Structure formats: C-alpha cells, structure tokens
Image 1 (cartoon, rainbow over the protein chains, first blue to last red):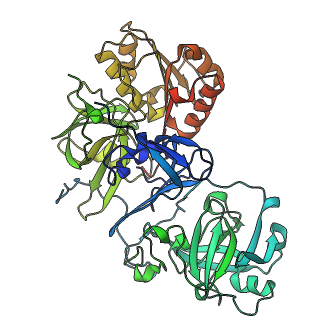
Image 2: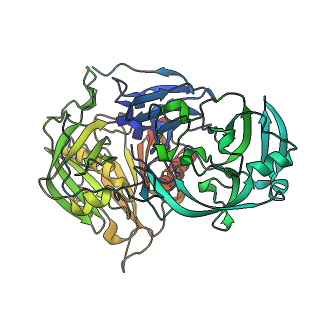
Length: 93
Length: 205
Length: 254
C-alpha cells in the first residue's frame, strides 16, 4: 500500500499486497465483523490509514481499528482484536 | 529474492545528514509531514476537555477555556519522527506537565509512568521522568498559530527528546500508572521508550 | 486466451519478481505509462493493482501501489504513473526511468475492485484524474472480449491536456459497441468545449449513468473527495451498495 502523508484514508483493497505477506488467501475479499459496531463488511471497503508507521484498517462505519499491521526489520506484527470474525469464501474453481 | 535489482538512478529521499543535531538514520525536512492513524477529529472546542487521571478517575479536568488560562510555556526544539525525518527549531507554546501537576494540586506525580489517551483511540506511554522537570508539555500552538487539526490540534503532547509518535496528537487524558504499559504502536513492534539518539525505533533495537 | 488470474483454485503466494521496462508512453505532461516485461505473470483481472519496490544504489527502498492499466489480453503489463511534486517514487517513474531499467514487482493484487466481461449488466465507470487507470483496464478488456453491453465512462480531468488515454478513448467510443465516454474539465476548457465544465455532481451522475433498475455495475476511482461524494450520490439515487465499488487514489507520498 502507499505510504501517504495526507490524512485521507485509502480503501481496504489497497492493503492487499501487505496482507498477502501473512495470508495464503486474498483477505481483502473476505468479509469482517467489526468489534466496535458489529457491522459486517468487506475488508476491501474498510479504511486504510497510517501507511508509514504501519497499516491500520478501520471500520468504514464507526472508525474502530479492526486490523493493525506493522512490518519491522525484525518481523511482522499483526493485531486483529477489533475484528470479531472473518468470513472467507473458497477460491472459485 | 536475495539480491534485489538496483533501480538505476533511484535515490529516493535525501541521504541521512551528519550533524550533532540530527540523530542517526534521520534526514532533514523543512515541511511538516502529516502522519495519521485515523481520521482527523473536528469536535468543537466547547466539547473539548483535558484531564489528569489515575485508576480510572479524573484527578483534575480542564475545559478549553480553563486550560488556556494556565501558565504558558514556550519551547524551541528539534523533533525527530521514527519514519526518519527530523525538523529543527520548531516553536511551540502550551502548558508544561509541571504546571499541570501544580494546577491539579499535586506536589508529586502520582505514578512513575503515564499513558496518553487521545481522540481516535490512540494511546502512547511515556515515563513521568520524561515529562516532568520541564521535559514535556501539552502544546496548543505551533509557530505562533493555534495548532492545526492535522498536526494534532487543538492540543497534542510534546515530548521532543523521544521519537515523535510519543508526542501524541489530539490528547485528551494523561493517565498516571505505577508500571509501564505499551501504547498503540508500542504493542505492535515499536520501541517501548523510543530514544532517537539510541535509534530505538523497534522493539529489540 | 484469457488467463486465470487470481481465480486459480490453488491460492498462489505473491512473490516479488523483477520487472523490466520495455516501453514508455507519455500520456500527458504529468503522466507516463510504463510497459513492463515480467518473467512470471499469472495474468490479472481488470481493476487489480501491483506493488512495486525500488532499491537505490545505497540500498534505500521505497514501495508503492499502482493499478494495472492494460487488459488481461495484452501481452505486457502497463502501469500509468502520475507525477506528484516532491514525491519520492513517482518523479523517478515518470521522468527518470528508461527502457531496460529494472525494479521489483508483485501482483496482481485485489479481488474486490475488479470487473470481467463475464459479469452481467451495464457498466458505469467514474474516474477522476489518474484514477482512470484501472478503469482503462476494464474498457480495454471489454473491447478485447467484444462485449456489447452498454457502458459509460464519466471522466473528470483538470484541463484538456490532462486527459489520459484521450485518443484511445476516442477510438474505443467510435467502435459503436455501446460505449459512451463523457469528459468533464474542472479547471480549464478549450474554446468550443462541448463536454462538462464542472466537478462530477449529482446532476451529471444521474443524467449520464444508468437508472438503478438497470442494476449497473459501478466503479469509482479517483481522489478521496470524488470517490466519497460520487459513491454517496449513487447510493442516494437508489443504486445497491453491493454494486458500487470504490478505490481511492492518493494524494500520496508519491
């Protein structure tokens, strides 16, 4: 995703490359239930913030931080406490 | 891939500067980059408050008007962002942590550590020794103007001798703690203390 | 042959590979397209993006995402880069880079903002500035697949000379296969300009788009402000949320 120096967020699909370093499937097409407002939505439609220190995916409805990702020289950090659950469709045949 | 291709002629940003005012691995900027972990809050000042807390209770709370009536401290200082930019001679105005403690009637800080709580669910941890003794303030003005929302206005913590993520934007509460607890970025691989001169960027540095 | 792209049954781990610049096309004074040759490209779907990573001689690295502008049917992968003043990567890609230069690339990425000819219904594409790039991949794919379903591109640029892919868009619209192109110029219009002369607004979206009953698939790509206002208007006009896909473009660290 693009590190951006503006405070405008990008869509969740922008984090696809970063998430692919951790997951074997395309997380951006999964749906996620936000821990803050219990809304279900596609990861691709969440808001991505803070590309320079790490990536944050916030709920498009209530701004709750659902996923935090930080890539340091020592490894990958992932926090998903704001995401209650994911629904992943199997890849198309 | 073991050996990435060199992109001929790609330099990216300017190389790190050798200077006794620029910590290792940093480069100098003249603008003021904006890094945000969330949407910029635009709540009216009439709804703004700032408090010193302990154990979930406010020791003292100020409205915007009350906060601005506190003694003002001016500070000219250099700031260093963990994303490797440094900015020299920035000028700030606000209320020092010493004056906040005094105004709250506290002779001693009620804990050795603090957690700054901000609009947008952002937190960061700073030891009291790095705030008291003239080291930190809650800043409301930058370069003589009210602090712009994208830079943390109406008020941000200012701890200029640590990496700038510790100078939390949109601060609303400073909570006193007996032990050090990691904040928003500190839980996710960033250094618990963040001294730019020791290049403490990440946990394990 | 249309390749499988990210649809393949076995999930494929993204790997960095070395892209070589095999062609350069100046699109506008501020925008350049890069044609890339890739050793191992699984194919893509229109709307997907790639990550690219540059490494300087001193080891300094920078990474950015760019939409793919070429159709899956095309032999090469094309990216379109708009120069952002004071940017770190886009000035390099839009000015300095030469044929034969190499950098790392991984992709294709993203399964959300995609359209293929197999999808039913009319297609309504809404673009601002260089946000037209992934939508161009859709239009190129549509033409290659000989899809005749009605399609409209509503495209906002600052001035006439800032219109990216202008002659190719004219050619596509002249094919008579149900594609309509509507330009609007927000800052400056040439004498005798017959297109729009303001930002994309409700009246424009209502008159140029399809009625909600036609269930068009709607793709909006551009600056945040355009994406937010256009997607909200489309919802207000009664279009279903799950038919509206958005992708925000910078302004970024470039």
